[in-house]
Length: 286
Image (cartoon, rainbow, N blue to C red; front, side):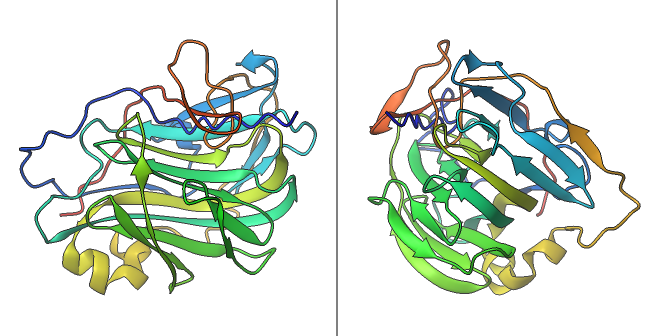
């Protein structure tokens, strides 16, 4: 049986307090200048034998591009997550927007989908996407398929003012107005090679998220990368880095068996959501 637990690295933490004041704008960006684990993200990886078993995906970081290659074993998962207790959401009053954007190219997928992205709000409402070769799926909206052109980089952006509904843009075009779904673990962001029982070759150029004032988030959205200091098109000044064998298991972003030490919640057939903690690196965008 195809085993696809969903371990979106999304558990533990504080629930957003109802009486909380306006959130402080923040911006967190990974732009390929270093391994994500050196910039505040926690890596989780493994295989059918469990957490911290096997090498994980074969990864390279070259010219600002993080490449995942798990084609050798469909039991591999390998993803990053960041936990920010009570500090994910925009303020409840008008004037702020949550934005997450990432630039991703899917080159090959064995199975229906493998790369994954997940967001869990401060009061535990969840949004998750899984990516195939030419489409993405909104996991908690009945696996709604959303097509995109295959084999090239795309810019994906999620915007939300209330963490209940969201807009999804691909390359600047609005392609979906959808809804978060209730979850059990708040305040987590996760992305990477997320499904156990599938395999892929794919490339990440950038992952950013934060809360911005409305003008920055809505008016200058198309220039978000520049507004918040993103890099692009760096070349041979950044040497290639490769990891072969590294071990970690259990918690996969979208698609794994949760580690035995973490609670899980079933979100679909053979899927579970789980989450370890971590320390974030942030840059104030106010």
